[in-house]
Amino acid sequence: MNAAPYPATRLRRPRATAWSRAMHRETVLTPADLIWPLFVTEGTNVEQPVASLPGVSRWSVDGIVARAKEAVALGIPCVALFPNTPTAARSADAAEALNPDNLMCRAIRAIRGACGDSIGVLTDVALDPYTSHGQDGLLDDAGYVANDITVEMLVGQALVQAEAGSDIVAPSDMMDGRIAAIRAGLEAGGHHNVQIMSYAAKYASAFYGPFRDAVGSSGVLQGDKKTYQMDPANAEEALREVALDLAEGADSVMVKPGLAYLDIIWRVKQQFGVPVFAYQVSGEYALIEAGVAAGVAAREALVMEKLTGFKRAGCSGILTYHAPLAARLLGA
Ligand code: PBG
Image (cartoon, rainbow, N blue to C red; front, side):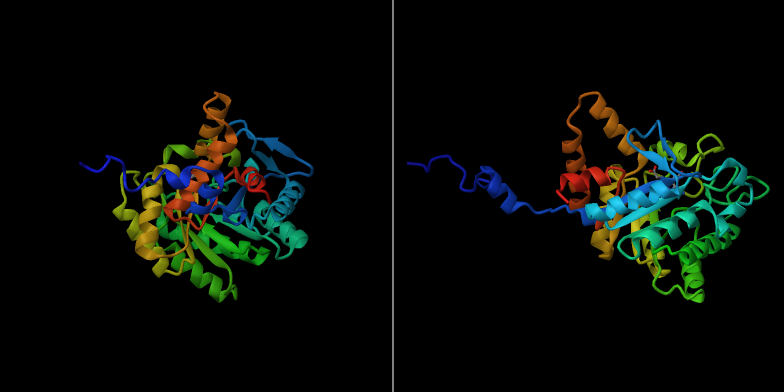
């Protein structure tokens, strides 16, 4: 008689009850895994909904402070700030980026004043909210985004942010050599504990559209960003970018966008064993919201599944516009 044709191992056995599924769960998400991106605008008591990002608004500095307090209450450890610079303050030379009283610096100071050290403030370093053409760097006579003069600007930009009280400067510009230059600038300025989270592997993506609406650069942007952001087809190159940024002094690295690049997150984590963060960008958020509106699935279920996927892939944390919702669902 042959043995009964039953499986010796039944992987379904531990899945049979909720308590057992909880006990066997490999990946755990907490509010501390979340970084909440916020858009700052001029004025007082201003909330401007961003049409292409349903549920997301630009806030004046007072509203940003209220969001930061909300983040603290929810257990979210860090907010990421992006300014919607008034059109009149944008220029070809992006001089406003170096103004110690620009919108970004005022928002940093206000959060620092109201929340002390109870929350981390991460600030974007790139020139696109300040250039009249919407590119992340300065243009040469041929219209090419010029690397080295842009890096000089980024160092100055990181310094005014650090002086205002930023905890983590996050260069999102993809210029070569900027991490070393910014680190040297921060050290020379005495900002030894200001971290650098490098957007190390940032791709020239179609998923950034709503963000450009939110910071007001979509209307002015000429051309694309393919001469500095990465080709979505490349993975080896992402590893080289990460290696360089770590060698230049980055404390942590980011992969951006998120869901289409989980393999990059995984490879970076496996190869370097450093803190890796993912930015689930505006277009990804908007697609999920559109799916919810179309009845694809419940928002809560979609949000938790995608965030768990990022952690499973190796992320230390995720920048996501769904951060407050996710923190609430996690029962903070
Ligand atoms: C630009 C910057 C972008 C984002 C963050 N910083 C857009 C771009 O590169 O054009 C995108 C974030 C998002 O889409 O949510 N320095």
